[in-house]
Image (tube, protein in one colour):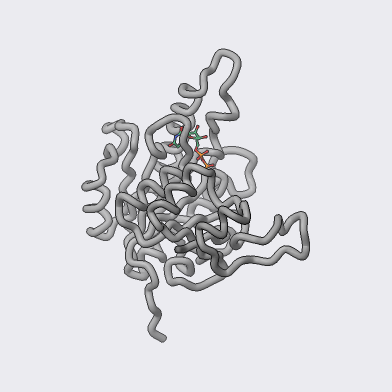
Length: 239
Ligand code: UDP
């Protein structure tokens, strides 16, 4: 049966935690292989796929700052963690049969290409999955903000936020069994109802850029492809 592609160019946000699977720290290779396959399948629909990867499975700046370690330095370390994850994901995507390129917001040209908008856009239009490392390249930001920023500047149709929950709920579904999932919300509604979808800076940028955010669970195999096809369980936050 013919399937409709919903989005032409997407930005998928994969948190560091998603890469650690059932482990307590670092990388769980079978989990990374699964995500890489899913990204390659999403690309297989004909959509152009960029990925912003987090670093929380290795290091979060805010958690290690303190004592002698200032926040900016800790955040630099956090951004380096995202580069490690990106290299692993790039490798796994290529193993899954799709060409991939890592571009880092912090230039380290012996390891991967430095991020430039034109370079990223060119790789995307040539069918490569672009893995974006280093977040925004600045301390005091998160990779969620990096994801929205890159989605806006690369003119993506949506940010696909892969999480542990299959959407946005009226309350925390783990605590409240009567919580129900929103199918669709506007940015303004999410803000008024104080629903935490991304950190405040990231969400404000998405709202300003009128960027749709699709929230879905990464635990379901094929979830990224489903989100790109505009199907599956998710919540769409859109104007
Ligand atoms: N980070 C940063 N600037 C950015 C993106 C990330 O300083 O633009 C640092 C920050 O210390 C953060 C860490 O990198 O805690 C890992 O990123 P994040 O916490 O967003 O990863 P995730 O929660 O998605 O795994």
